Amino acid sequence: MSPLLLKPSLLFGALAPLRTLTTLVVFTVLLAAADAYLTAAVYRDEIFLVGVAAIGLRLFWQFLEWLSRAYVLTDRRLIRVRGVLTVQVFECPLPRIQHTELVRILREQLFGLGTLAFTTAGTGAIDAAWEMINRPGEV
Image (cartoon, rainbow, N blue to C red; front, side, top):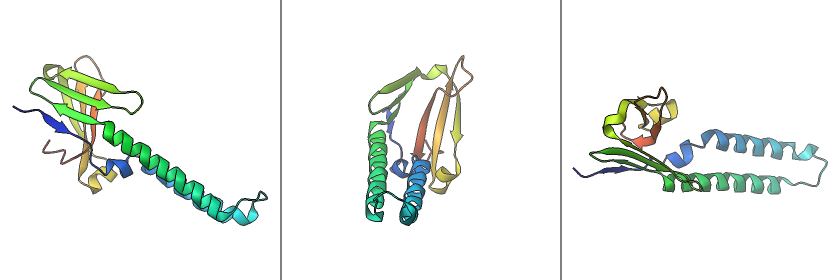
């Protein structure tokens, strides 16, 4: 049996930081709207430029997160690799996997994505998760 190698969906880049992106957009628009009331010499164009730069940097970081993730299933073990600056590797023999759960929050359901969560023997919490993968039911 050849190993199953997966990555998160490309939508991971936009869906995972959705809360941060929404906050940045709202903050930028509110700050630009308040431009007339600001006493400092700040112009609306500069506010939008800083806002767009912050959004761009956040999306770039999320792209690096996507690049760094890999999910592997072999006939003997389950592996998850993630992290940009600090790489984390979770590796577990298959007999130690006690429970597998499919988690689909609303934003994942809308795009046909899901997260597979794994717990091992002796723990009461999720030890590893394969986040935002395509066709999670088939996987």
